[in-house]
Each structure stands twice: as structure tokens, then as C-alpha cells.
Image 1 (cartoon, rainbow over the protein chains, first blue to last red):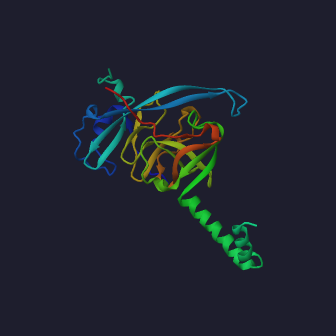
Image 2: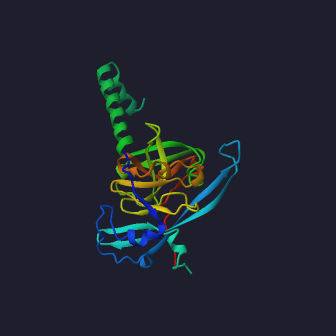
Image 3: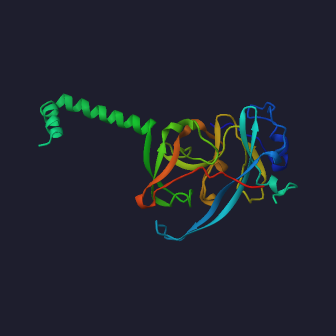
Length: 92
Length: 171
């Protein structure tokens, strides 16, 4: 069974990234997400014309998701910043 | 008669036990290869559009990545369904243990985020509105991961490798 997970609003991200999966303080990371490498992943919202066959026309609109890949002493971790990037630190 | 068929005939014709043993060995070897090596499996469903077609695509799955070993964010995995026992589901990994992801659909009013717990990953279908995934059943135990989806192999004319789609953005 999946353990219950705590969810929190995206504005808390900067504080939350200071803790690792074990609930301990992350070592070797200063908490500045803006310094981490920005990466993107495209997902989609697609509509398939009916009836659905292999040849049906499919139209897709991309949904961009942004992440920061940060280094810490254990290696690296990834934080989704799709909402965070919209804040003060806009991408130019 | 070729040498191979002559060898087969002298070895197995009139030796039912020998034939049965060889058949059983072949089946076992095939099973081990399928379980721990590679498999090719048909897919069905709109949840991974446009990466994988809605029907008729066959994917190559590498079992070296079973139980999530070596999986990275952006990879596509096949895992045992948490709804339908015995069925394999294909989704993209958006978070590994310790990573942070949006809990709901991006663009929805909710801004809730979660940290992926130890021993779990976060999976979402590429076609966000048509996918039943971690947004519904929560973090997926890595123990359910059967392997990494490497490529679409059939139909042969449309064969292609499936790369991890995480791309660096220039800032």
C-alpha cells in the first residue's frame, strides 16, 4: 500500500526542498532553486477523433512542465517548478 | 537433408523423454528471458498519446530496470497495475524518491505539491486528461515496476526509440 503523503501549497517549495525523503535536512544544498539547472518536460492534452482507430486524427496541445535539477551531497534531486517559476524569478 | 535436420532427427526421433526435456528447457529459458531480459508487448489506450499510439503499437521493455533500478525522471516505465491485477500499465516517471512534483494536473486551480516518499515514484501519462495515474492512486511503489520502455518496435515502419524527454532550458 502507498503510504499517506503530506501535500502542501507550491509557495512552500523553497522551504520544503531543504528536507530529504527521510525527513532529514538535505546536506550540500544551499536552498537556492534559481541556481539549479532548469529542465523542461512536455506533456500533452490530446483529442482523438471518433471512431478511435490507428488512423484516427489526433490533435495535441503541449503542456509544459518545468523542473530544477539540483545537486546535493547524495547526488541530485529534481523539484517541479512549473508554478514556482511564475513567481518573482521569471525566466527571461 | 541438411546436417541440422539430420542431427535433430537422430537426437529426438523415438526419444520422447529427451524431446519433452528439451521442450521444457526451452520454455524455461524463454520465461527467464521474458522476465529478466526483454519483452515485446502490445499497448492499448490513449493515455500515452502522442508518444505511443492509441492502439496497435508494440513496445520493447527492458527488465534490467525492474523494481525501478536505474530509472530516472523522464523515463517511460511499464508497471503492474494497481487497479487490474496482472495488467501492465505504461506511464512516464515524473518523480523519484525525494523529488518534488505537483500533486494534481498542471494548470488546474490546485497548487498542491508532494515529496515522493522513499521506495516510490510518481507517474503520469503523457496525454494528461486521458490518464489514470499517480494523481489518482498516489505514489507508485518501485517494487511494481516491471521495466523501462525502450522503444516502439511494431509496426516496423514506425519503429522509434523512446528517449527520456527531460530537456535543458537555456536561462
